[in-house]
Figure (cartoon, rainbow, N blue to C red):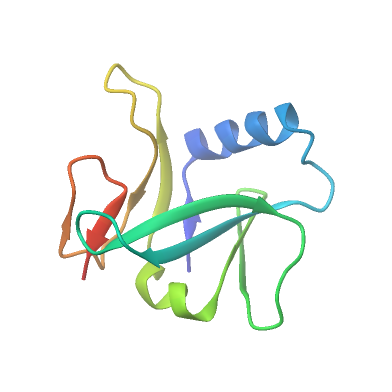
Length: 108
């Protein structure tokens, strides 16, 4: 299961509305090869689920991932920081053995 913080929910809603992606759109979360730690996160808006996608909903936000990515994302929380450090969206992933300082890549 993937969860989302209240701050991330609010920010996603704002961005979706600003981009006109409200009806039928969801947040696609993927894990890709790359980044300074070996694996990186990818967030995008999508409106077409694939046959084997894993679909979650938390706090009214629909989150979708593919079967390969879910292996790395189980128990992860998508969060958002608007503080002075300016992180933006970041992942609290209990499966990551290490992460880079920017928080955009990780290793298991």
